[in-house]
Every structure is written in structure tokens, then in C-alpha cells.
Image (cartoon, rainbow, N blue to C red; front, side, top):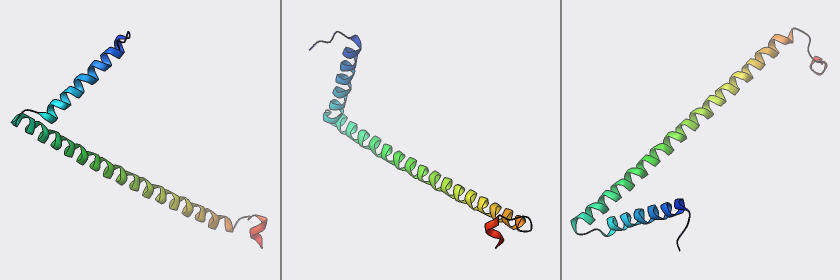
Length: 98
């Protein structure tokens, strides 16, 4: 079914040629096809390794951020405790005077 929009036509052409190229790699002819398959497998393995490394890095960054947040919370709690100790000699709220 022909399309009138030149962009749609271009997209269809690109999809067709991309798929055609993939088919050629998979089928191949003799040694060339075997090399194409091996190269494709190697590329896939490299991509998987890169993805795993990125995931590990993201997890490490998240852990570091969590640790930093915990440290900040602890520091805030310590500061609050120190402020309470300093205030003890001064006027305390009515509930704490008992």
C-alpha cells in the first residue's frame, strides 16, 4: 500500500534495508556468514557485559547515596541532642519541666 507521506516511505525503506542486512548476516554465504554470526554474537556479549557493568555502577552509586543520607541523618540527630543538652539549663517547655 503506497503512502503519500514521504517520511513514512523513508521509514519503511529504512526498516526494510535494516532487516535485509540482518537477514544477510544471519544467513551469510559460507565463511562470510559464519564470521557475521560470530561478530554478531561477540557484539551481543560485549553489550551484555557493558549493561551489567552499568547496572553494578548504578547500584554502587545508590548504596553510596544511601550511606550519605544515613550519615546526614545521624549528624542531624546528634546536633538536635546537643541543642537539647544546651537548652536544659535554660527554660524548657512545660511538659519537660516535670
